[in-house]
Image (cartoon, rainbow, N blue to C red; front, top):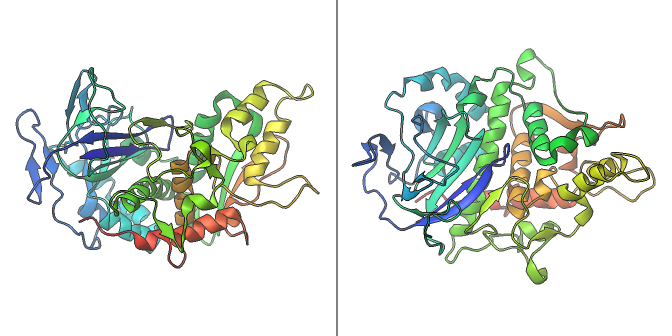
Length: 416
């Protein structure tokens, strides 16, 4: 079996590792056996129907403390490559503390995202480990060819047991009453730009229709952002492995990546799974795959901050940010938004996921009307949600590839 884990929030990791073990044969919650004392979910009752009643009751479970080592891709320890699948906490009652919040976040999601969360995920975990990222996704599927190494390598450990598809939301974000979309977006930018953040971004502002107080940027909307982001990773992967061998699925004869300025080694397009067999950390480039527009990537922005142009810090780096978010300087061409955000420029998988996330927010019931970056030069970006709708733009083409007629989201099949 093969497992892939993905996290675009904070300095997190995306990993793919391998295993070959027969899947479970019964549904329900069962014990894990010797050396694996906690109950874990069995995943064979598929395909899943729509979540009836409460999303939390149907899908959400509390992960045991230390019940899964995401950073080691499920390895028991750095010295033991035995796969330990996610372990449920013996006491599931704390989930009741988050039921209303999680159900509210699910209720804000567009119907297609609700369907995916119900049909294409076995369990949504609440992760109690504060050292883990705000969200992660992990799946066990047909082996894609990785093998174990000695000593164990977290990039490619020997693993086993099951074919589950999981996502997780960290308990710390559920407990953070100040969590909002703008804070999460700013957090990602800080993780990418590190100490250079303040030189190119002054603030991230989210506005809404303000019809009533419930429409403000709330914690439930932040949780929705995390659910959408992690579901984007699962969707990209599940679309690829629906075919044998795994392949890049097409939307109306094209692929998602054909709309983006991505090239692989020798100019080839990126493969279906561009990070097979290695760990992808936030901000990493992917193998030999690069965006054609080299001046837009994070490394160049940081380089421009560190090496002032004409004795000035920041201005040329801010211009690079404006190439992504807008606006272009007056008289300098026509703005053609190609990226959902800065993170999308870093790797093909991030491009897919960040576009998926932005489409989900735009199509949600959050009543959010704008997401805007404010720059240190007292100017502001265009509304990122409006960038998504710019006629003839690369970003709109990618959005239509996801959600338009013949789009990829409509091609996603339930877990079998």
